[in-house]
Length: 629
Image (cartoon, rainbow, N blue to C red; front, side):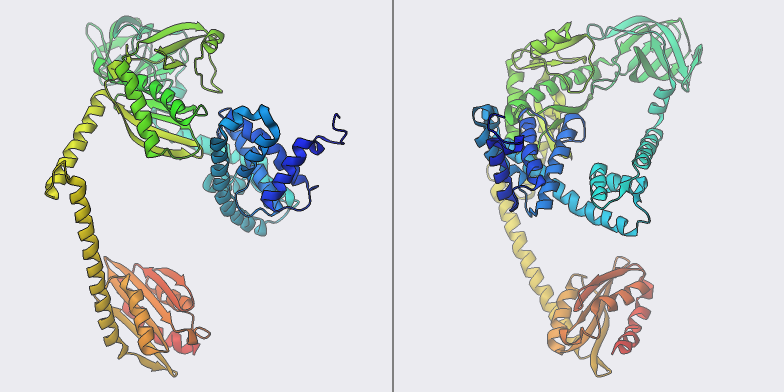
């Protein structure tokens, strides 16, 4: 080697990184293998993220997630107590020099992705390891069964590869075949419970293809090439029957690419078929629906007419989805990639890779940028070309998606170029208005935006305007002083809530004073047991504290009922907790009223559902306490 060392890990780059890993983890043995693993993993992780890969549960994102988690596990073995992995990005940039210029320009983003993933994994690890420890403590033999490994994964998000790592460290194995069987059983249950449509689709097999002519036409004369009833091929269908009709050519768009299928009507001279959905069956397009009148036979000619109003709304939403994707990449960064979408006539939903919740100002910036492109009224153009030519043109494609040799490229002026087979507006100005309704997380590293366009967006403006007017009326304000009026109402409400709480505290003190005289002696110890009426459950704790102060040394049990539920609290002064534990006492009472509870030796709370059993449960306290004294 040029640096005359025995391994890659001894060259300057790795030696510096290993020292940085030791510093952030607190490790002292520079020959520890875990240091080398972490140093190696920070390189691959940092560059993957700078290339646009975000931790997820699929494809490259899953590979990245596993590498990060392996590095974090090695950090834990070295004794790292806090998040550390993201702190290695800066040292990596330092040792890589000019080779890390691209990484340096995205340093903050890369660090944030790593930090977020490590924090999430720490929560998963803490919860999952505790559960895994419980299972391994009960294990007979040297193999953890697949069902248990699957339950840890499915219910608690604990990865099976991590389960295998932990088991391996303890000389144990995981029944991976059993895990896969449990996973397949879940997939089967999901398929079986997914409803009529999925079962229908799985039964239908169509030979041949349908020509889609919906890019240019809203209606089309066509011939019926196949009919299916209850998933089985038939020669004819009659009025009132549900079926799937396959045509040789159709303007109906079959659900794909996130865009829902069209609705409409198939008409012949004596029959009318109402289409409720359109799906693809291989190369064929099937029209799902119900025959409203007449008879339809294979070979009949029909006029296929889509619901034009609905289709137009879908077109606007689909075009807005492309503008949204491009805007997100400009505002958040080029790591943003589409992870799923739904486009219907009411709204659009777009899932994308991003490592944290969007800030309000980022949401506003994206919305403004999309509306800017709408106002530019850019032409929306499509062109079919070779896949390689499309990529050379800069068309965005979904990673892992399989495409034909020739693809349809959708271009919106100079703002967006993507592969897409859906239906779209003619110009971006047709969208009219774009409004983001919500931004949320669906999984680690995956965010979701829901938005509306056109008439739907205008409707939301009307709703907000109506709401503001209603609020203004309620607080006797107007658009000029509404926020001031609302703040005044909130301030007044907080003041009244404080005054109310003071009155409740005074009432509790009075109740406590009257109760203290009812305490009785049990084996030389003061015992107070009482059921209270018209007392809020949360006031019981205050009353117990007051009674402890008044009685000095005592055991107290208070109860109240509200809306068919029992609330219980037990208090034991500290001088008596070596003989009577509040948690044990309250547990005994709660069990009798159909509940459970617990707490500290000096204070414990519980709830129950059997109001009628409460008097007898409270009567039993004296004997229980006497047995402990």
